[in-house]
Image (cartoon, rainbow, N blue to C red; front, top):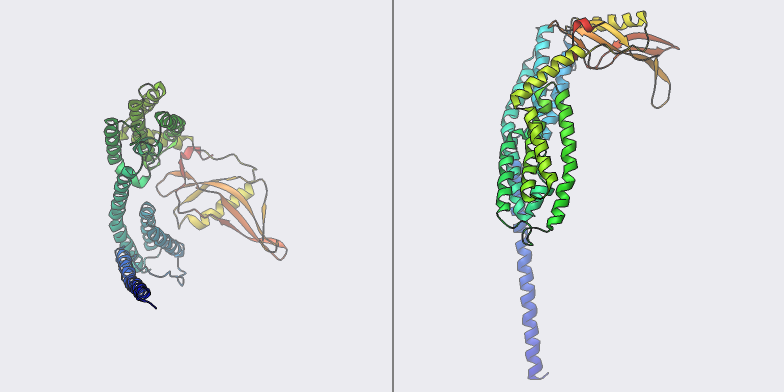
Length: 412
């Protein structure tokens, strides 16, 4: 090997060693990065609010308050699921149901120890109070992130193609800020050339096409909004739509400014502004809903009977009162049979007859002296044993739910 060849060989050897040294260094660095990520994930997990431990169901109890004890632990299980899903609004109503169950237990069986149940309610309420604020903060953080993300996508998209106009019951409080942000963004963009290549991936005509298509969506919403305001009897049924009206109004206020030559956009702004004026303030809405509630009470009547059978009606009425007159303080007043004949029930696997039922609606008077049409059908059920139907009983699953209030004079 001559001197020149030896120099080339030495150079190749040096380069080879350098490559493997750099590779080894990178390999040693990788676990450190992975450990840091794991540490960060663990820190994030440890920051989540723990769900409280709840008492076990009392399956051994068989006293006079058994129905309410059973209801409580079903409600407790629902509350557990709501906490896991962070369903805050659903959890609030479930807490109230648990309190009512405990109150009923104390009335029905004063000797029953409800301390564990009350402790569960206290723990769940504490979790609710803490996470109610956390959820609001999360929503605000998400809201802030959404608007920050506008800078990374098309500004016109944010205003006209993907506007944030949908309001849920949990996001009502964020609507004023949402309106402010929307109007601010529109004013900022109007000061620029919104249809320049730098600002938009769409032409002016393309954006107009998107906005024109939104006319149909707003018209559908206005129709649905009018119908809901005529039918709703509680503020929570309509409040979200009340605020959505304002968001749609902001959309068309911006659209007519960006496209002053489009008469249809100005007409949409006027149309929705007129509807907002007709709806009025939130206090006006409350008055309208109260009128709806009163009218609904007046118009609620017993459904049309499929058949008239005095013996069957009496059996259902007597069975209802035996079960619920004392325990639920609900006195059955009248029964209307809604199924024309018996409905046979069979085993799903073998098709063997296991029983039969007749369906009916029942009106009852509650402890408050008011009359109600029960929430769902009441069933007269008979088991099939030894070749004949026997063990007749009344089944009503929704006794803890309040039915539709009606005038007692309409129970006829």
